[in-house]
Image 1 (tube, rainbow, N blue to C red):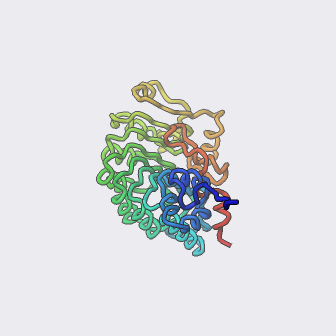
Image 2 (image 1 turned 120 degrees about the vertical axis):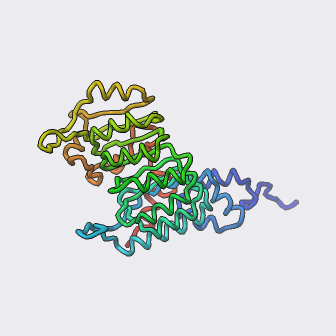
Amino acid sequence: MGENKWMGKRWEDMDTDVLVKIFKELNLVELSPVSQVCHLWRLACSDPLIWSTLDFGLLKSNYIQTRASPYIWVDDRSDKRLSRILRVAMSISYGNVSCLIFHYNLYMKDEHLHYISERSPHLKRLVMPAWNRITKFGICQAIQRWEELESLTMPTIGHPPYIMEEIARSCKNFAELKVMGSFDDLFASAIATHLPKLKVLSLRCSKVTMSALLWLLDNLANLEVLNISHCLLFEIVANGRRQVIHELDDQTLEKASRLREFHHCQSRSCLACQRMMADEGIMRWYRYEDWFWRRDEVSSLDLQDYGKLFDAECEALTAVE
């Protein structure tokens, strides 16, 4: 009898699109050795369909708060873990990451941001980690490399004009901003001055002055979508007292009526609003569900579920012992 021969394709001869569909089910730890099998597999592992979104939402730093600047101390092993994970991810993705998501309790340094920005030149959306250890030079240098950046989610910052100015100078297609924290007149003025063509702005669960809100509505003619859901809105009244606004007046609603979408909720019966009141306007995200900080009423800003590339199994496998 003739010898039986297997007529199917060998793994190394499979079509790239088939390999990509298979490799999309793997996380970062699993992809690393797979990408070293052969040239074809390496190309499939770096396909944009796999790397379009790199979600590090489960990756956090081991830290303690301090009284001196930068008001945080991070375990050296945590920094080394982050560097190791970034090296693997940036090596395999081959510059194909267009959306990058970090946890708000990840305290990276300039060197981490520099490494990422050099190796993800086509980034279009960024969800920033904490600012504490990132300098003005560090973030501006990164933004200069991200010329294609369109969307930024960021914790609040003490002096916002410089970052708004850098975005305006370097990112010509920038259209979407989310701020998590405090939003005052200075922030509103910086946006109106440097980003007058901004189309989408979310201040969800932030502490916002009424004067800043009105500044936005009066000066951002191109704004189409505004989210102030669950914000602690307040104004300064006689004797410098702060008065919380629980219901928008007709004048403010009339100004907002020109927007395509205007999301607002300052209800005493709303759980998220109750949390904002309890936290006095600065949301303590760590007190609540892991998914809570990722939500947004604006669909393009909602982070939905955690990605496959850095899932719970991957987080556990790379954890610091």
